[in-house]
Image (cartoon, rainbow, N blue to C red; front, side):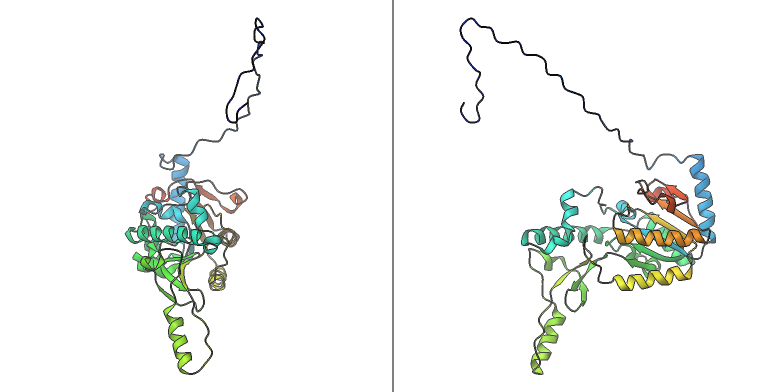
Length: 312
C-alpha cells in the first residue's frame, strides 16, 4: 500500500465481497447546560421588591463598599475576558516577558486596550457610583479594571483603589517611577529605558559613585500570576475600611477568578453580614460555587440595567 493512499484488497474471481455488519456505536451521553440567562429580560415582581429594598438600603448607608470588574466597562466599549479571544487572555500572563514573541503580543494588546480606554466614556454604573461618592454613601470602590474610566469622574476617582494597576501609566521596574503611558514606546519586544534612572546614573557618575544600572519601563498593569507591587498599600487600605465597619457591599461585573479579589470579597461580605448588612451580587454570570452563602441579594443581570431602577 502506498503511503497516504487507501487500496481495496482484490478477491479471487467469483467470490462476492463479504457482508459488512453495521457498526453499532453507543451514543455518547450529552451533558445538558442551562441556556444563558437574558440579562435584559423584564424584572420579575420578586426582583422589583428586592430592588426597592436595595434602593432604601443604599439611601440609608454611609459606608458602602463596591468591588467591580470588567462588566461595568463593557457598555463603554471595552471588552471583558468572556468576549476576549483565548489567545489574548493568555497574553496577560506573567510569562509576557519570557520571550520576544510573547512581549510583542502583550504590547500589541496593551496598545489596543489603551486606545479603547482613551475613547471610553463612563457608563451608567460609573455615574451611579460617582453620585454615591458625591452624596457621601460610598466608602470605597475597589476595581479590578485597568481602563481608568473612573478618571472622568473626580468624586469616584478619589474613592477608587485599582487592584490590578492602570493602563494610563508606565512604571520603572527598578525605581518604580511612573510616567504617562505612551503607546509609541511599546512597539516590538524592547522596553524603553527609565529617564529617571538615567538622570540618577549621570549624577552618580559626576560624583564618582558606583553605577547602579538603568531600569526599564513597562505598562503599569499586574499580570496573571504576578505579585502586585502595591499589595501592601492596598492591604492597609482594606484593613482600615474593615475597621471602619462597612454596612453594605456590592460586587459587580466580576466573576472573581483572581484569588486576591475573591479573598477581599469574602472579608467584606463577612464583615457586612456580621452587622446584619446587605451583600449584593450583580453580574451577568452566576455567583461562583462556594461564594453563594456570601450574598443575600443576587441579580444575574446587566449592571446598567439594574442601576436604571436604583436612582438615589
